[in-house]
Length: 338
Image (cartoon, rainbow, N blue to C red):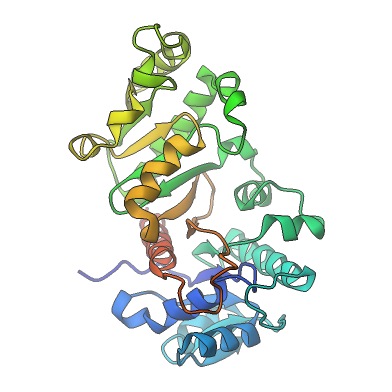
């Protein structure tokens, strides 16, 4: 079956040019036919992309374009690159100039998606520490995207998705000691509503099944190992069910992700970062996608970092980047038909 094709090309931000992002963009273009990808374009870094492709042993012609609409025309013969901003390819050696290019690429690609000139945004991996040095104040790209879309950061929900599992962390980048205090009925309701709407809109599921994890071992064992399940999580699930949302739980997290259980839900909401990411990465590390739910634009990224230690060596696995492009294209095509 032919992959769905969105109306406009996809925009790919470069990520940190010293990381594995550029070479994986080139790898994705080289597999455009076998993967059935619709047209996409990279934003900035034409020279870096040429050098990254050569280092990886890929034959990737690069064509600089002045408008996203030109991408479809050249995509069959060359990797379209929007704009002339560029730098020096120094894999594994991040610096201030690279961070500036990464940020400019992210800002431009995001603006094009917001304006509708790109059907979706696929972001390359960034180095947050390097970006912080040049004044980037957001915890990560998710929060940046929420602000760029005029939304509260709490309404941009991070989902990790692979072929075998989708998970959403209720709390994300905070200390484990802070997690219980951050779990509220209001937060569970807010996140679950976003997840339910996104499963319907971007994944075409008419009645999403949402499994909600407990916080404590064995989901608290009726209060013997904590009362968060009784006092907060279960009441929130009951409220979601009253709204017609297919939420169940609280489920013990140690058994929810077992093979015989994964077929019983479409997405799991976990209480904290590692409760969501450990099972997903254990199952789908080389094909995991980070998708931001709740945005007015489609945004995905490979669920890995810059991997400076292997950048330019040819060792970087392209699976997650290929999956991110595929998921973005499919979601954008569904939105176009809605």
